[in-house]
Length: 138
Image (tube, rainbow, N blue to C red):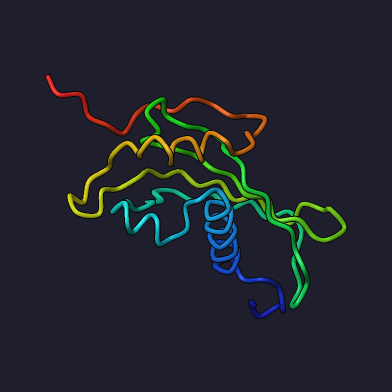
């Protein structure tokens, strides 16, 4: 909570990460599976838009949608909407990221099953294809 007894800005990020982890776990990709695959999720940019306050102990509902994806899955944009129980939009968080090989410490395209899990997410109205993170060797 912040000094005004509202949900603090960092708490929004923590809550949406929890929602993302739970959603991917429901699709067969719990954190342990990412570790087994030696695959990490790397967020390079977060954008937070605040619309309404969320007060201390107020329940919220968090959606998880795909806002963009590279054809090879190496780069993605996801969006979470935090809604108050009455349906009012409290915040929208849009994050751009990619997948990292945890051993090589470089961005990679995800395995087909991980890509399929992302492709199965609902899409935002402004969904757009993204360029690949993979460098083309010449």
